[in-house]
Image 1 (cartoon, rainbow, N blue to C red):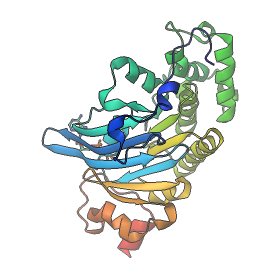
Image 2 (image 1 turned 90 degrees about the vertical axis):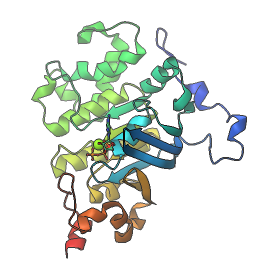
Image 3 (image 1 turned 45 degrees about the vertical axis):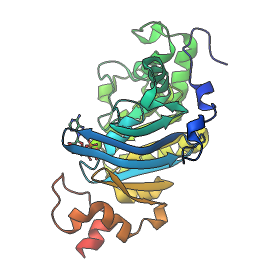
Length: 296
Ligand SMILES: Nc1ncnc2c1ncn2[C@@H]1O[C@H](COP(=O)(O)OP(=O)(O)OP(=O)(O)O)[C@@H](O)[C@H]1O
Ligand SMILES: [Mg+2]
């Protein structure tokens, strides 16, 4: 049951049965995220090339790949920020490819998005940043912590407690460390009551210790809330440590799909071959067991 004055959710759509044309296809209704033959072209660049993927509820999925392999494009197509050139995308039962703008808005309210650069408003306090995650659930724009209903303020404090930052509630967001800011961004996403969390290189700006803390936090929340998390990452070892499943993109194609312990060097070489050949043309590859092994 929703709170009065709040906007609708996709609950019914999520449980809707498949359409008749789904019969005979691998299109299922159980997956939180599903795409079929998803391609995205930007001019002459094929950013995604016929991607088939189904992500079940509660899964922690890591998306690996060189710079330019299509990771961000894939994540952005899951909340309708990128319109596919071909294929189908279904998220929380909503067919993104054919959804009207109202359905897309409803979908986006339930999909949290975490960015490399945190995306907080630096000059306002931590608590108001978290409350901003509820803007899709309230009817009017809000300015200042006290403009939000008390129950939302209590909820926001609860999320801050969960990420271990309740004591920073009234501190300006830009005075926090990078790792703390990313945890605030997670608290803000939780304020959306997300069913799916997309994280595009959430730890790329963080030191190893803060990176581990952020990934650990997402894992804990995923397990406690059965939250589906899809994160793009450059750190193979980190991905192996927390993900249930890793996929690798190369030139927009899924070239590896494996459990952490099955992501062996052969599969990794499918994803990162240019690194091994010394022809890497993106930013430097992060050091990890794989690149070290290849170098040795
Ligand atoms: N809006 C756009 N317009 C034109 N080309 C784009 C656009 N967005 C992405 N591309 C291209 O699509 C390809 C995939 O880009 P994408 O950002 O998805 O890669 P990525 O794997 O996220 O890379 P990185 O690790 O550097 O973030 C790249 O060749 C990129 O230049
Ligand atoms: Mg990217």
